[in-house]
Image 1 (cartoon, helix red, strand yellow):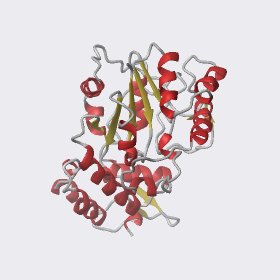
Image 2 (cartoon, rainbow, N blue to C red):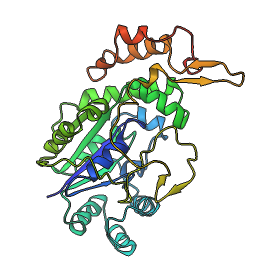
Image 3 (cartoon, helix red, strand yellow):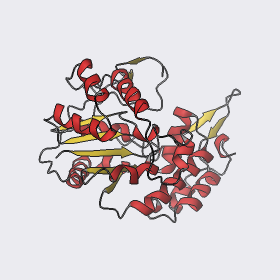
Image 4 (tube, rainbow, N blue to C red):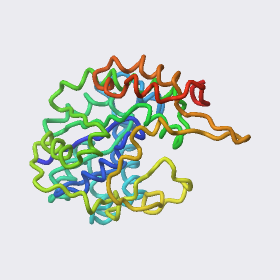
Length: 316
């Protein structure tokens, strides 16, 4: 049996990158986005912040017609065909009676894959719904420095730092509950950047699969062409080709996005610079998150002292 894995986190944590790395390994298929079952329930929380802060749900009724329509849309919009014709995708999805039957049909059609990864975000509240499908349904979460992630979310989506903090606290609370579950595994963005082969082998070991050779050279996008990292600094966000904002293709992992919160700033109309993250903001994040085992590694006196004391625009 193939493994079906949800890759989930808070937006701007590196899940698009990790989904591309998984997709590029042997016998692996990864949709980004794909088959967003958690957003097709009758009681779906407000997106994105309500979903981030939602409590765990169970016994949810999925609007299957909506699931079918949105799944086909995601296949087409992001050119996630994987060598299968559009008519075949229509047959796989529309001739199924349940979400699980869709995943089972995928196994049969893409029989060369033993890993099927579905990248969601803000979906951890759906954890128990997913894993009750069976032993081969697993969950992988990505964690990133909450201040770096907040900077990226502000730049990309204009999330306030307060929204990012509230979302991260709720995410941390849910992680605290599920991290001991044998169907759950989590990785840190920073560890992946520093030791990609080691982390990918650990991920596949969680899948129950031995990854003998790690591919870090030919990294594929969800359209099966060269992966284009979707950075927060991309300007023309409406100019997409095959599901991707156009930019430079992937040319290797780099650590430029680690500790970016220390140097990020805004410039107002008068040319004045404002720190995105100042000591007050840092203290707010530290007070709320340092007590969680999963986030304690991100806070130190040295990091705090590296920041200015002047309030930035986003700390208000």
